[in-house]
Length: 257
Image (tube, rainbow, N blue to C red; front, side):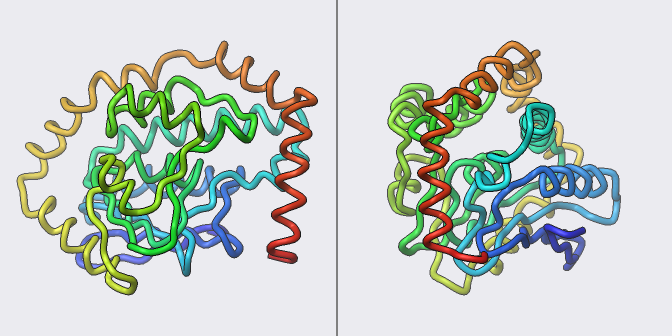
């Protein structure tokens, strides 16, 4: 694996995003996450997963610098892969805790809200879905996932304004479940995981499936028409111009990262 690290402790897999400074998502990371979660789900020796990042980033979201240069086939393949990863994570049967150790905007937030429980470090970090101001159309499946946790009305308002929340705001909105001090996040995530895995696995997993049945149906629906709309907007002059500005700012802030 080139973009993630996997360790195991007390029958719990700790999957650490490990790509560059900010763990930005690209095609390779989507593929590796898909592979490792599918393998964990089939491994009877692993009872649950904790997903986390490194330093001050859970994940900064999509790697816009790399994605901007993808050709039409590559970007369509990427979005298809990302949406499939989201679907697979939502359907993941075993306990899944997100240990949000830093910034988690956009795609980083999407990864986090696929989990069953989210713990975030309290500090000067942000989380939320800010795709609309960037010029990226949010697919219905992502909206449904967002609304699953914070409600349809709030999800609609937050999405349309591209709201990014500080940890305390995210806690109040129901986007995260717990805030912890720096340096304690993995311990807190392991404590929550123990609460889950001490319960009967069959009962817990079937209950999760039942609770998410409607959500799974929505995110499993055919998204090809929506994907075509998203891709047309991705290639529009307006979105390309916005992306160029963002990429320029990113390169100024973090040269060589």
